[in-house]
Image 1: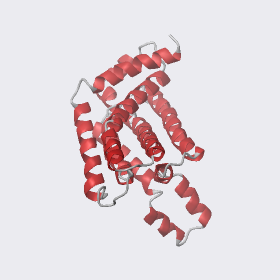
Image 2: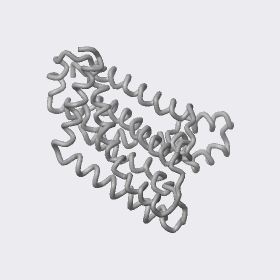
Image 3: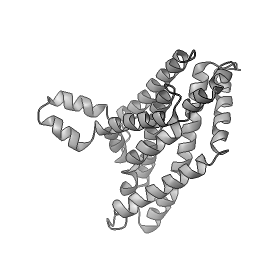
Length: 247
C-alpha cells in the first residue's frame, strides 16, 4: 500500500471508533447546545436585527478551548494507557501514517459537528438576506481553527498516558494561542512594548487570524497560519510518538 492508502485505513478505523461509543452523541449535543446558547442568549442573535452569523461564530474559539481537548485527549493517551500503542506500532504503517490518519479522523468528526449547525444558516437566510460568502468563509475559519487545536491536542496527548492531563495541557495551550491576540492583552502590551513586538505576538495568535477570516476575507496569511500550525504540531506528534516508543 502507498502512503495514501495506509492513511485511509487508519482514518476509517479511527473515524468509526467515534461512533462506537457515546462520545459522538455527547460531543455533538454539547457543541450544538452551547453554540446556540451563546449565539442567542449572550450574542443577542435576534436583538441585533442583522442578517448575519457573527454572534454565532464569535464564540467558537472559546468553545473549542474546552471541547476540542475532549476529542484530542484520547488520540494517543488512551493508546499508551491500554498498551495498544505497541500493537499498532507493529502494523505495516509508518508513524506519520498513524498520526495523520488519527488527526484526519478527529478533524472529520469535529467538522461534522460544525456542519450540523447549518440550521443557523438556514434560519438567518429565512429571516433576511445575509452575505453567504462571508458565512462560508467563517465556516472555513472555524474548521481550520478546530483543526489547529486538534493538532496541538494530538501532540500533547502523545506525551502522557493520562487523558485528564492531556485535556488540561491542550486546553491551556489553546487558551494561550487565543490569549495572545485578545484585545485586552494587546492593549496592555502596547503600553510598554514596541509596536513590532506587539504585532509579532498578535500574528502568532489563532484569535487574530480567526477573526480576520470571520469578516469574510480569505487572506493567504491567515490560511497559511492555520496550515503551518497543523503541520508543525503533526510533525512534533510524530517525533513524540517515536520518542515515547520505549516507554
